[in-house]
Length: 312
Length: 290
Image (cartoon, rainbow over all chains, first blue to last red):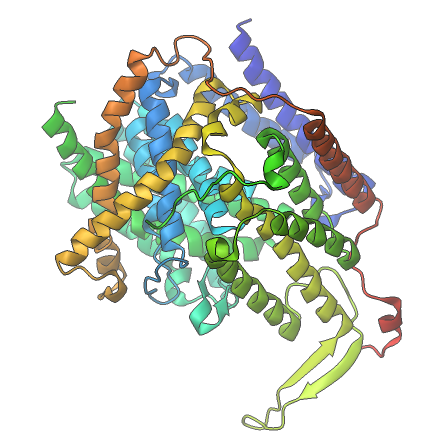
């Protein structure tokens, strides 16, 4: 067998073993309730196994695809993306200058960077941009490291770049829109049943708000608002496939990446599921959809102009 | 310039170690802090972190902004936890009352009461010690990590050549783009753009950020062509690369790594068997229950 394939299989088996170990040590030996599997442990591991098989299938069927190649160009774009993401997140997080926020939505426009870099330069560049950019940005502020959020930010860029695995961008958009719609709808439904949970992502030090104010209606419905904006970009500018594709794929990446980070906080920080979804996921992912729908097409258009000018 | 690496060669404890050893120690330290809730153990860790800060040779003036931001944030957060008791519920079931602070006024017949309990006070203190330990160690990194060693450090920590080099480039680009951002913002301000006074609804506010974000991003991509050419001309990525700087572990680096790993593993193991959990002094446990 090819050494590369063997490595991938070993990594996936390692991940499975890690899950087993966490449940065995944390759940059975130490009796930590949030790490216990409940009634049907086998079924839960079957689900983990299916997820890993899915990851392997994506690797197996796309391993010859150019999207995964890393050359000089990609290395430089990775570094540019990560540095830009770090600088923008540092500048817009409230330490340097404070931009006004509209009903609990803090303006964090930096999120368009991993989406744009993933969509334009491929999944590997997107992943590096999100993950390393988030890490460096957090370190600049002095907050320490949050591996699950860095990984989630990486996933945003990775998923945005998966568009390269599809031959027909236009057809891929419809599937992506359906998946995004389902994810946004589930999160919003959970919000409608738990409307009193605090917005843990909103900080306004001058007003004495540190992630403890009850989530506002706008933020609660932001996933729906953001998805509507994505739809508008997709269909109002139907002639420009690149704009629509960048926004829909970036939007899906945002939902999956931040969903991963917020849901992993159920086990890492011990949040109840509803708090993770309503208090963490919605306030971060919903507004991001709005920023993405507006800023990503502008970046894509500007980059297309640059390419025309320089003949690349 | 907003962000620059304020690295200087300083005679200090932190800079006397190999950067790889320090990164491994930093990760172990973070792991240890995260697995501990006992205030006594946290104070030991905090003392260690403060020891490193005080011997780092970095002046207060240089890192004032970072400290003030983190400090304000953490103090308020702990105070809030202390007043409401939110956040600590996972760690204690019953609370021992030290005193009830009753407000001398009433709002619509409701008299605000603050229950000062031993659990809330100690939870807030533990939180303060935890976050300050993490922040102290993190703030130091940009000041003490030699930019010339970024690439080789990540390579020797086991990352592939290309990824290590990308990390190196990332760290080099950050100050450059921060400066580009400042220049762009000044240029836009000269044209009448005011970021402090964004008006309109959410959508129009976001749209008005484009004149800052798009020029910096596109300029960075356009400028990358020279770097790509320079790297290609030197046959980047054709063979395993060699690095200009070399790193060698000395006995003190090995000792630091060993100390970090052993301390982390012991803390983790002891926290698994039930030590280092949330702690309040026994004398306070005889107080009446809330």
